[in-house]
Length: 522
Image (cartoon, rainbow, N blue to C red):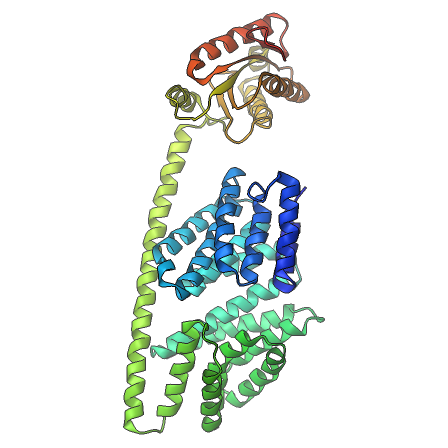
């Protein structure tokens, strides 16, 4: 049995330990549970995808994501589907940055907006928290700060219900601090100083909270939180103290080879140094970091460092440097406009996605029995037409016609409210014995029909027997009589007629039983 808490522990192990070892362990578990990696549960597909990504195998992670989408759909899990789509969006962004042939912004945005809709349909707080976090990372990577912020916040709030303490909560607050620092930095580059200062203040509050939440035995998280507190204070009243704070917490991170944190902090450290009268030191720092950047560094990190360098050089420099800075300012403004255009595109997609969801809800409502929540006669009749035309792609179908014994007496004696409660409970009992792909419909007042695909006669009989026992176990005065028949999909009308006659035979024999339409061996 796999629970979501175990999934999240494996994800943490992939991030903090050996991702290849975690992946091999998970694949062996998937084969043990389902016979193959492909047929494994969505939660383990999630771990496998994360492990590939943590190991830097992004193409393999993307292929794993495709299997995860299929697994989530197979399990009818909107929460895991949301995680899969958001992960796929992130991986497409990473691959698109290094290979223009993989660049697909429209596909990324579709995945993210569909992931948002799927997350809204899930009730599992742990899975939904993970989905919101991954969606937030996708939007943040696209510099769509306005969209990432509420997802990080929701992920944090959900996690506080599950784990009131721990590194997961620190991670969310650190992510929020980084988001607002990056937002502030970009606002500074386009001359929107007041807004930038507001986001620095928000980043400070998240950094301080991250420091409070950081476990006492985790110097790593205390250093990351302290680093971001210093960055948020670089434009404050005491830049010298901010520079000292950044350096104090950056040194152990650099020593531990956590260089991404360090590089992110350099523009803030340079600003703090320059504002405290140490401009030459700030220039030397930025030039050293620029010279040491790896070839695969994200472009926006290079842009932040380069623009900071230009500002420092042009402050008291010759006119040609100020001309170069103006060119950089023009590029920053163009990037800001591009960001706003992408933001507009996402909001348009969201509106279209909402319309699609509302349309599906209306269509689903028209096909759903309002009392029991199972498909109604309209949906059932359409399914029969579809199957008669061969669209279902099945060769053999078993039909179960269910009629309730003594339901009229219950309804008349105890009232319609009692009858409604009984119908709702019985529908749930019947549904508990169906599989994904089976059809259970309420086709009359106290009559249901079940269509089972790819089952032999014995399996169909066992399903019907379990349904009878489940209804009996409800402890109502009502029981179930079930007629069972099976036959080729092309002769479905004959099979239905046989199941209907068998149901009446079950009732005539006293009810609370099944009866076969023919003397099939079971």
